[in-house]
Image (tube, rainbow, N blue to C red; front, top):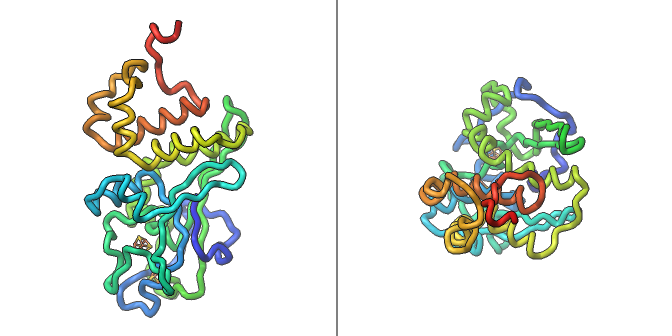
Length: 259
Ligand code: SF4
Ligand code: SF4
């Protein structure tokens, strides 16, 4: 689920929350900001919610200005990727001489670095086996590993606030993995557009929910909450995707529409 320019520097060893490492990143380090250039970052739904809020723009504007779409080769699942500047340097649009201008709302991948996180799902629908793992990315230009501060992967995740991101995004991350585990076909353009909207374009998804007949058809007690709480709306989007992609019966259709 995570991509970065230094994929060749990923240590091929799966790590756990107890794995230890030494690392410190600070403004006086010789490589400061070097990791914010020419990097490929898959954005998660919650990344976009936080970034668009930080920039005080709509999801549509954020997606248009700061992302491009990458389609997974095998499943054709669409992913929003953070777009680097189109100049010789290829810097992230949010990097400044004093660091990340959206630091408090930076994406999960940036929070994890120099670690990466992955999820694997295998087995049949009734007995799915889920596994989360972590790995170190040891890019030679990153001098933080030479510092003395000690962490476990667990304490790093909490310090960087990425444990909270993982909790929110987990259900969404599992959607493609569950489709793969079921051996579902490649997506048609309509399903790709629905996944993209419900995953990333929260303001458009809100209009879709409240201005279409969806809420007449499904039985939900969440209407008020999803109208006022963006995280609740986003999680409703995950349920909606699981339902339309036939992964799980997450929505209840009103009786009059089932006859
Ligand atoms: S979002 Fe911030 S931390 Fe992430 S690559 Fe851009 S400048 Fe660096
Ligand atoms: S220490 Fe690593 S993470 Fe920190 S600025 Fe340098 S390259 Fe980036």
